[in-house]
Image (cartoon, rainbow, N blue to C red):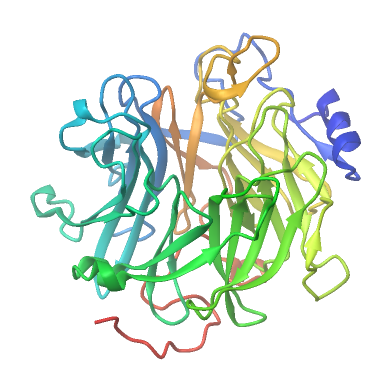
Length: 462
């Protein structure tokens, strides 16, 4: 099922890593229906959601008692911008529970709905949907719409509570992230069209105190080669060993780590910059210890790079330029978003669909499972990532991915084919402690806060 290909040699030469591994994909160009995945990957549900290039990212609630997933919808030529809520109570018969669209959609121009985030604060559940609109459209300054979804599955109880706007930095939020800070705050972290990321206290947002809800900003280190450019994506996690909240930002110049324990005074810890093939970062995710990180930069042929932030021992290096490993599903393709559940990395691989690789040895990651969610031709994608062979991009197929820790459910949002739900044989859930690591991932413990953090001094923002 797994074999080396010539693209691995390219990764070794270009990126200076000791070894890289990839699979020939697809395994057989003439595979039969039902055989487009590895034998250890089980398809549970598939819901086509409409026209191509209207489905983007996906987010799943982590509590099994709340079996709901959220799928962001781009605008497209059919004016679909908004989100779907998927009912996962019966995993093999998942269904659309709710459908929300921006008001006056025919007047809007731009990408539309991009990033979905759910949060929990003081016993209530919130969902935030980001938006990006073009100049001249209504809501050019709208970043996100926030809803109270505590009453699900009763959709009549869904209530819009706020709209986050940034008139000084219009253009919306391309990416967002939900984080339970060690101080007790439930934070909504957002990209913005400026040289910083915004940190919002969701309790204050829900209470209508929008002026006080912005509790911090994380800057981007100055980059003379791209002045004014900010972050694309980020991850926030708790550093158990050093008892601090760490922001991992991908954007201008590469990848940057900040200590945001004090939200008012972010402190730059380290940067990955100056390496071959990396001028700007796209997505940046650490393992549970914060030592090894998976980094994506968005162009065809680029693998996911693996960096060691502490190559000389326990000390975090100030500047890092060279990866220790690299992985790709198919060297002509482009791996996109990813979720780390060590030792596995779950990837939405655009034209290569769902991919899973093992990073237990960061210098030699290898594929352990896959499923082709995209059934269209290669290099016929949307966007400006051009291929010299066809003049068209590779940004088609699997866009967003999420993993539910309680049972190992894997979700994909595909540009073309909609919503997918999978289980991988042997992966029935994830808890870092079972691997001898901190139980730290993108899945938040909204009730108790991050593992190993001191008891928060702040109980409420009101």
